[in-house]
Length: 264
Image 1: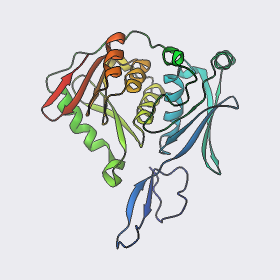
Image 2: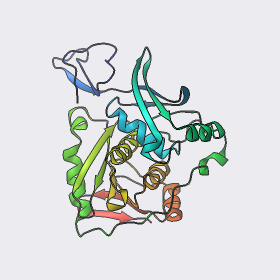
Image 3: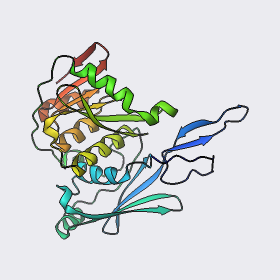
Image 4: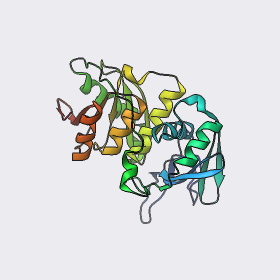
């Protein structure tokens, strides 16, 4: 991860953290960078998200898969990370078949870190992309505690500044294999999904652990990625529980040291 040595204003693109000195203080602080990141497919704007500019290749692939723009990594032909005056652009090029699919199902959304459904044109679009059935792995005793300890250690950016969510991929034993961070919890999960796809990892072999609450979108994205179990450190929403039950996804929340509650 590249970190700036100085405190430029505005923050440089491609950096996850910004060093600055608040007025009236004697020491520098690290602050998480949040900026608009546009995703375009074959030259057509599809989404604008507010995200932390780190692991952007993973973010682009994971977002495209989780939104149903593509169905496999091989349908993404290439991607460019471009610096723009007001943010960054992730320019994706997909196969002609997927481009036609997107033209038939155009989804424009202005993303926010706290709202996963911003920009949908109608309520009917909520269920427009449905994941395939998923199967939860069998967790070993103490797996959630081990995964939780691993997530704390893996959130290196959050340890420096706070405010960043973490998404981790863990084996049923609780061993944490990879983690991604972002100022938005949905973005962190997209980055994790993209990292798994880039490595041709089988999502059925483990589970997802999130540092956040359990929202509908996290449940949906976990299932879209092919994983059958989602564990979150904070509370679930009613729609998250209902959706998990409909998808056959095992949902754990209030995952803390020594405790957790299974909702689905």
